[in-house]
Length: 155
Image (cartoon, rainbow, N blue to C red):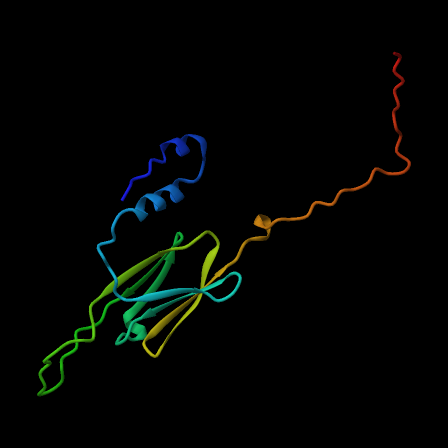
C-alpha cells in the first residue's frame, strides 16, 4: 500500500494533527484482528449503532469505555471448567479475551449499551453544540430617519 506524505498539509493547516494521524494509521495493518465480528449502522440522522457478536460473554465480563474520541470495548472471560466428570472434546465457541477500538468523530457520545441474545448493541448519538451549528444572521434595514450624506462631484 502507498504511503501518503502529509507534510505539505502540516505547513498550511492548524489543528488537524489527529486527522492526519488517523489517516496514517489506516495504512498500517491491525494484525488481522477479526474477533469479535461487528456491524456499524446508521439508525437516524445523527444516531448510530455498533453491534458486536459476543456470544458466551455476560454483562460483567464486558467493559465499555469512551475516552478522548476513542470507544474501547473489552471482553475478558473467566476460564470455565468443562463440568464435573466431563471432558471438552472440541471447542468451537470462542472464549478468548478481546479488545476492539473505534475512533469517534467530535461530538459523538455513547447513549447506552445492552446485551441481548449474544449481541452487544452500543448506541451512539452526535450532539453538536449550539455554538457549532449554523445560524442565520438577520440583515437589518437602515432606519428611515437616518441622515444620508450626499456628495456633489464636479466634473
